[in-house]
Image (cartoon, rainbow, N blue to C red; front, side):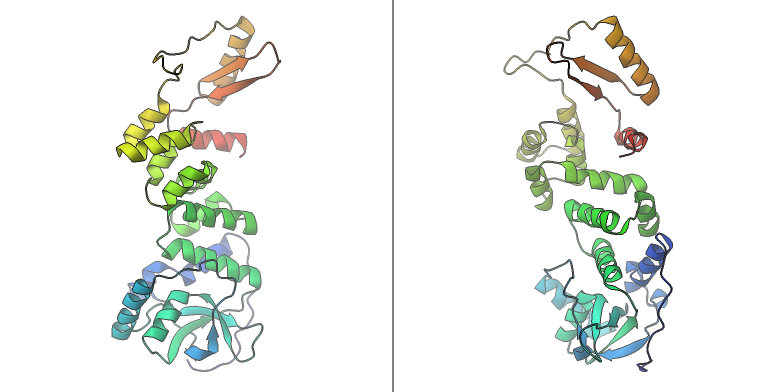
Length: 299
């Protein structure tokens, strides 16, 4: 296990199958189940391992590291670190996954750490780092969403592949990604833990999301109450009365019926005769139906 013989280069992986293989190496379940932890390739002196300069995660809680160091002193490192030969320093290794364990091992004054040695390129190193952060860190919903977005934008992973590899439903992936469309002040409330993901999802389609989010936080509303608040009828300022709906011509009404039949959702077409423009509003009954609409539109 202490041999430093080079690790053979793996064949280039395909999307999906490779993602699942990466997940197998960093499966969090292995940390609490020693029998399922992957067998390390070797023990590596801790001073020969360097952190990844492109690690997306920059902040590590000192108290959490001390707790992990205490656990390592008592039980050792159950889940091996993942490293690759350092491309810039001879006879050294660069961390791919497991920086928390590496830092805690130093606090625990370990001289060697168990490691899996992989011949990853720079792109794969970043991919594994993002996956590990999503799987292990106590992320807020926006951080989780940004992790999914990076995996999709940088590496071409689909929502289906992410859901399959990470053991989550595709609707969870889709709904989490939609949180990034919220106004920045609402995203800040999510990051601060003032709003839950459920509260935020209720506000996604509202053009008053920031205003409503502040009301939700100030009044401590439940998710159901937030949904009712977001779905409330539009009113004239200060009147408390619903806006009257003008009578639509037969052509517009027929167009609404045609589009509704295709989408299987209520559709409203608003036409401005003065400018020739207008807008189309589609009403959905729940998040699953919204997800179906997004798929239908190819978004």
